[in-house]
Structure formats: C-alpha cells, structure tokens
Picture (cartoon, chains in turn orange, blue):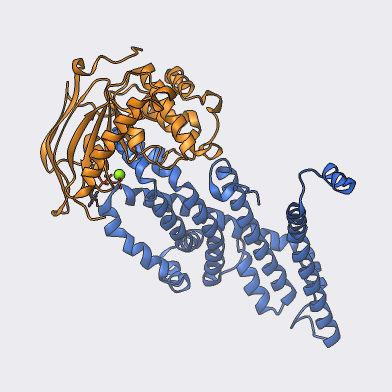
Length: 262
Length: 286
Ligand SMILES: Nc1ncnc2c1ncn2[C@@H]1O[C@H](COP(=O)(O)OP(=O)(O)OP(=O)(O)O)[C@@H](O)[C@H]1O
Ligand SMILES: [Mg+2]
C-alpha cells in the first residue's frame, strides 16, 4: 500500500469536528468548543492533563457518545466500522487465539476466516507476531498483547485509527520499542491516527500535529506542528530539534495546567 | 573453596527455597489422596468397634461390613433404583441448563422480560421445594413429570443467576469495540457475551448438578408411591418402614457417591472447556 503521506498542507480531509461541546449529567462540562480537522495521513496527538476530555473526544469520534452541541462530519459520509481502536488495555478476547482476535473486525462484517486469512497473517507479521497466531492472550507479555491489539485495529485498513493511551501501562523500554514500531507501521500502511497521551516525549516523537488541551472545561489551548520528516528513529530522539519541540510542547502543557490548582 | 564449587556443580539452580517448595508440593500431591483415605479408614474402624464392643443390634446401627455386604446382596434392587434417581437427576439438570440459559439470554436481550419475570424466579427459588412438591403432585398426573418439575425448580436458579451475571460481565471496552464495529445483537451475544458467560455458567452448573440430585431425592420422598420405577429415596423410606437399616445405609451411600460423581464429572467438563484460557483452570508456578 501507499507509503509516505503527502506534506502537511496538501492532505485530503477525513473528518471535521466543529464547535463540539459535551456535557455529562447536565452539569459536567467535559469538552467546550472543540474544533479539529483531521486530514488523511495525519498523526495527531491529543496531549493534556487528566480529565481534560481526551477520552471523551475519542468516544465522540467513535460515535459511542453524541455531542451536546456542534457536529462531527466525515468526508464522504460515515461508514460503520471504518475505524480502528486501541485502548489503554489490550482488550483482547481471552478465549480466542491471537489470529481469531485479529479476525474480529472482519468477522463482524460477516467474513469467514479463510477469506481474510492473508490480511490477518500480514497484520500479525507487521507487528512481529506471525509466529504466535495460535497462542492465547494469556501466553503473551503486555507488550505483545498490545501489538495484537494494534494488529486488530489496522487489519481492515480503516480510514482512522484511534488510540487512547495505548502504551501508558508499559515499561519505558517496551514503550520506546512500540513507538518506533508504530511509526514504521504507519509508514508502511499510510494510516491516519489520533493518539491520546500524557507524555510530552511520546507525542513529539510520534506526531506531526500535537493538540494541547486544558481541563475544566476541557478545551484546546494550543496546536503545535512537529515538522520533522518521517521515518523518525533514535537519531531523531536524540536530536536538538526533538529537544526543542519537547520544550515547546512542555511549555504549552504547563500553560494548560496553570489554571488548575495543583 | 572446593566445597563451594562442589555445591554449585551438584545442583546449580536449586536453592533452599526451591527444595522446600518441592517437598511441599510432593506432600500436597500425596496428602490429597492419602489423608482422606486415612480418615475414612479410621472412621470405619471406629464405627465397626463401636458396634461390636457395645453389642448394638443391626436394626439400630449396622456395622460397616454388614452395610457393605447389603450393598452387594441388594445390588439388583438398589441399582435399578439408582438408575431411576439418576435419570430424573440428569433430565432435571438438562432442563435446568436449557431453561436457565434460555431465560438468562432472554433477560439480557430484553430489560422488559427481566423486569417482569426475574422477581418470580427469585420467589420460586426461595420457596422450599418440600413445600411446593405436594402441590405439584396434586396437579401433575405423570409421576415422572412431577419429579422432574421438582428437581428442575431447585436446579435452574443457579444456572439462571450465574449465566445472567456472566452475560452482563463482558469487558466494557470489548463491548465498545463491538459497537464501533457495528456488531448486531446476535453477533454480540454469540461472540462476546456467551463466551464471557461460560466460566460463570459452568460454576452455576456444578452447583445445579448437586441441587438436581437433592431435588430428585426430595421429590421422591414427597411423591412417596412405590412399585416399579421407584428411586433410591423411596428405597430408603421403604427400608425404614421395614427396619431394614443396613439397606438404608447402603442406599444412602449410593446417593452420596452419585452426588460426588456428578460433581466430579461437571468439574472435569468445566476444566476441559476452560483450560486453554481461563484463570481458574491455569496452573501457576509458586
Ligand atoms: N460518562 C461520564 N459521565 C460523567 N462524567 C464523565 C463521563 N465520562 C467522562 N466524564 C467526565 O468528563 C471529564 C473528562 O473525562 P475524560 O475521561 O475524557 O478525560 P481524559 O482527558 O481522558 O482523562 P485521563 O487522562 O485521566 O484519561 C472528566 O471530568 C470526567 O469526570
Ligand atoms: Mg482517558
């Protein structure tokens, strides 16, 4: 499939969020006036303190909850199931093998295992787990389970992949490895990703756009562009550019937290 | 110096903890069988001596040998009775599984159904079956059907309540994932809720196995009539009237053994179904 994405300014629009508010129980304002345009090939990070509505934004995009005000529109209309999702936990079915877990999105569209076997094996190969197709989730380490979860999210080649702090529960070494692998994957299949994280370093390393959010009410306070070319690797991680972007994002995050008494 | 080297050469990876653990495991393995057998042997011995030393007549308390020989000599009668009781028990269990799982699925598919009928399932459960059974035998003509109904009443609730709990305890992120992928109700039930409910269902099944035996026995007591096709409980009643105490004991032992076998069988099935993936069936080190 097509590799590197078009330059930032020339990408086709995938989805647009316009003036979205989300109020829970009539008085908890989780999001206020959210605007975001997602373009094909973007890697967008939502960065912000706990409770600023990052997960709520993802749930709105996934159509699991509906906006109190404003709207979300998809270029070419929304198709059910045209999303991949990765949660903070791997969220695998413990009774099913690795391959059966990756089969799930196809299975729910009525596809038999054999008709999509090649895609499943290919997705597992891309995350380095093709040798483990017949293993059960309990036989895998935390990092490997997360890879299965990623394979499941991208096996259908969805228009957009949503990731909610997928690596937050992993140790730092595993997290770095998965960050590298995620970027390699993105290059290979050219997907569009919205990635939620608490980590400044992770967001800078991965994304070309960082949306910094503040809490109470949840809102966007800054959008940063990380204009460093992909593929990014350890060289980028140790470069002065990287350090400068981290400083910028970190400053924005501090600004986001200023209003809130620590 | 050389002593230290010898040590490491002899057992490189075995330390004191490991040795202690191995001893504990060996003890566990052997003790699990030997100790209960030992207790049984002691109890039988004490029973036997009690009877012999006190000269207790066999119509008050038969000794273990007499019970055992009665079990053999009365085997044709007792075995027929066992088959009858077993048949009722297994049929009741089967109907309990079908009814319990069916109702549980219905309840999770429709809140209306659950709100309307769940309270009555609870009422049926908390009313003692001995109190309902006489009524059942007034209105139900067929003896078998009456027995079955009684045993079912006792057995179905654990299946229903456990399966309902299981169907509702599917991981909420997986539920969201199914919604995102546009799964139908049926797909969600088939691929998510039923597998999630399996361990819960099997737990309920093991309880229901024992309860359906209890239900069958209680129902036989209440039904009372004998003749051909009477089960173990009736044989106990009948032997009691005739002061045939050894046979009472023999029948009692058969019922207990049947209960144990049912429980062990269901535990085995449960283990086989869950061994690949469920925590309860996994062997852990340490
Ligand atoms: N279903 C809900 N009902 C009521 N309030 C909710 C609900 N979901 C989220 N909230 C509230 O909305 C706010 C934003 O929550 P959200 O989970 O989106 O934050 P987050 O940025 O993902 O935080 P974290 O980094 O801790 O995951 C919080 O104050 C939370 O209490
Ligand atoms: Mg969150």
